[in-house]
Every structure is written in structure tokens, then in C-alpha cells.
Length: 78
Image (cartoon, rainbow, N blue to C red; front, side, top):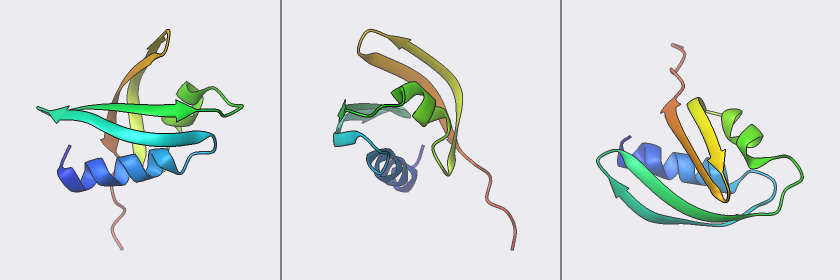
């Protein structure tokens, strides 16, 4: 994940209904660790797999930790 993709992902995540206070804890070797506060009605894992501009390749959740692999969606040629 490039730095610009990281910023776009963080902004997309912050725009989800119920997401508050998104913070980057670390970004090392393509692994991003974030903390956030979520007060939405829909389970956060459902929102993550439908995040516009990104696709989730795997989602697992245990307690207050969610882990998933994300990639940008291919850009359609104009």
C-alpha cells in the first residue's frame, strides 16, 4: 500500500457512518495499524467489506480487533 493509498483508505474509513477518531498507530512493511471509535448501527466488518474504492480480501474479527487484507479496486479506463 502506497502512502497516497493509505491516506485515501483512512479518509474513506473516516467517512463511514458511525466511525469517529481514526488514528494511525503504525505503517510498516505494507501493514497498517489503526485505532478508531465506532458507534454505528451496522457491524463495522460489514461496512469495511463494502468500502468504496477498496476491496477486502479477508476479514476476521475477535473482540475489539479486526484484521483484513485490503487492495484498491482497479481503476476503469476512461
